[in-house]
Image 1 (cartoon, one colour):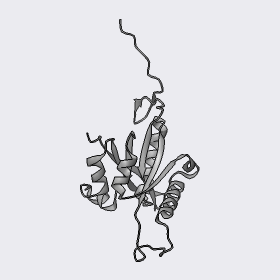
Image 2: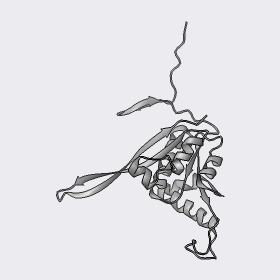
Image 3: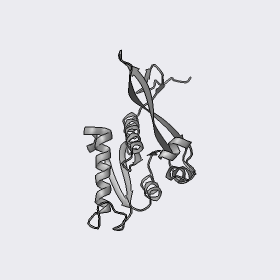
Length: 188
């Protein structure tokens, strides 16, 4: 005779499927950060998902040595320190006080290779879409496309969708933000 085992940690709500939320020890979600609005949304999406599954969030940014001509801060700039500052500002903007709970990794190299290296053993890799990918829904030549093709864990590409609404008697426009994302399975 089969015994029914009740689901633990389920929650239901309007517009939501029932789901289980076991806290998984060692779970980790990696999010790529570059300071762009889409990376801020990717951090928010990843942080929310970490809360749902009980995972640790790791923010990752790559840097490359610049030249005097290409560095906006001149010859005295430190690309690694600039990258750490960008990650810190992005996390503060996206998460506020919760930014202190995020593990940060800054490494030299191409964005796709640094992200793939960081995502080794992770449950998921999350990145924001580029402007081109957001407009054209085209990722095959982008960092996201490279990640989708080579990642050993699922890849989520987050786009920020802006929705206009009217409020008040003067019909002034307001702006709402919502997430739009695509999940690709792990490449095996």
